[in-house]
Image (cartoon, rainbow, N blue to C red; front, side, top):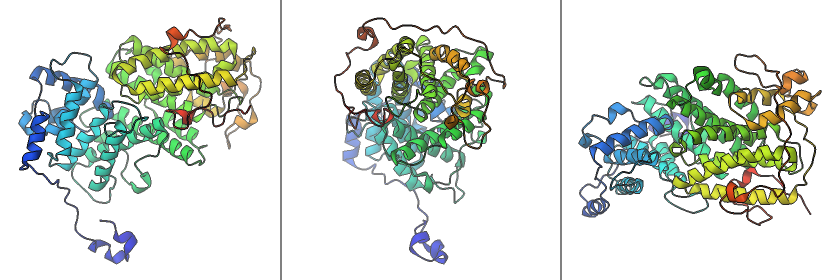
Length: 528
């Protein structure tokens, strides 16, 4: 233990009790526990055909983000040799990304079985217990507006608590299964960071108490494709989590853009959107993971460069990022891949819609923004079929739209567009997606003859107007060709809410303090 580090002399640290044994207190003989498990059918398993389908779903769509159990440890192994808690958790994940009928078993059944086995303490291996608990986030029956012991937040907090008890956050001693422990710990941390961003609440993990190195390719000897995706995902989630934590505490977040720039510059070519155009692998599983990863990335960009006030400078980078998110979801919709996403993607859609609301002031940009917003609405409706938490995102957007339309004055002219050197680098791959707003904004950027001095990164040579406003393409070349982005006038009467959202916008003027995603709206509403 480490208590002597702060309660006694250094020389006594080695005498501070025994090493923890990490053994669960199993009560297999408890008749009450056994009766509860029998009533909930906690040990029941689906047919072999269903099992194999669920395994395939899990390892295809869940495993890249939760790479803590290998196929060889599950598939082909007699079921009596595999933890029932772990099996039920895997079946839960596999069933949540499936649209096929599962005869007489449902995701809720798998969740109840896993939950029962956990709370009756039927698993003796603490590492297996943490892995299983970390997978229960795939249930998540509703959003953060309801207090619940069934949400992703709840189960991830349980996983954090158990992981810290077991010392997964510490690398002070050599232990067995280091690679597995490292991947498990950082999968929990990444989810904690993204949940914190989605809810605008404190993180459960304090990384100042963590000395475990990030995962490396060596931790993935059996998968050459999952490793790069997971490593990039963990790093991006950590950057996002740090930004949110500092924002909540009113600390400086100016270095976040540089962290994002370092992340995108270190991104392997195979994980860039431009690689999909080069390889023409649009429909592969890897392309699906690339799109998911880039949705998270553009969400971070949109959050960092969001509009702070209703009448401030036009947030060019955030709007472009929001439009890129919409285009990525359009690809996912076209391939019927929304059903494979986890629930936090409803938040990414909300971030994109908030960013695009900045176009409302400018009539010539609003119609193009509406096209993106309709895509976002369709995606939210698809998400809602499986994840009711999408309802909170939809309602939040309705309130924000209502507020934006009441306090903003429409303008005929186009806003001034500025991208500093860092923003341009962050958006360098945006042309690899059919980003609608880029076709509108790009001609404006090209016509700019000067760059706002305040937007040039500190300690960098002020770039020329052309090099500052053009994102660098893959390979380091710049594209200076004009696009046809013609100005479009909004049709009279505003958007058609019957096709845009299922419900008309709500009438509230003030954004609720605890509104889902409200921490990403304007910092202050205009007075009067």
